[in-house]
Image (cartoon, rainbow, N blue to C red; front, side, top):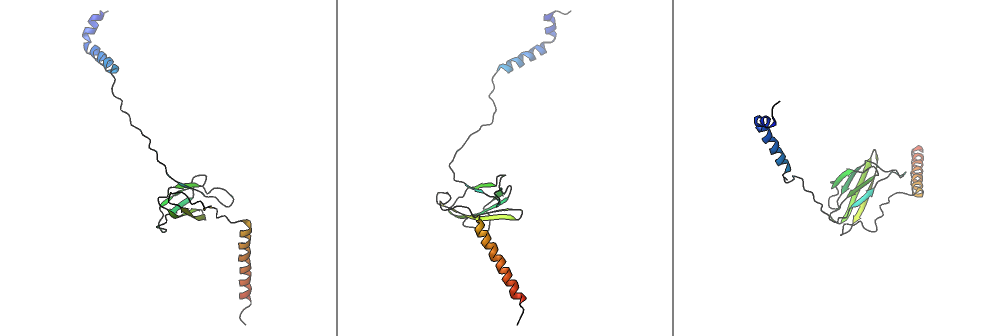
Length: 157
């Protein structure tokens, strides 16, 4: 069996390598990490809630938001979330037009925004018709259809 001091004499390079790794492992190198920061600002957002007449949310519905100066081209587009909600940040006062569409159903609403970017206090956003209003509209359509049919049935005299 070889003596220990003779063994390390033959493998001096291995001993130097192991010592070098040990010394290098004990040194503290500067950590290379990504920096992070948080910035905060106060903004006023408009959040809409789109629902069917039944109250069920219009989930994943197409949304188009038109600013007061350009009612032909949408300023913001997107989709509602699962709860039928969509948010946008108006950058100027005026009446913003919002349309929501999904599978042949949809609604539009004019949202007045004041100089601070807040929705005007008089805006309710509830364009739902009451049962009485729906009944009156249906009755008027039926009455008009019957009257028109009777007029054309009578023929020329």
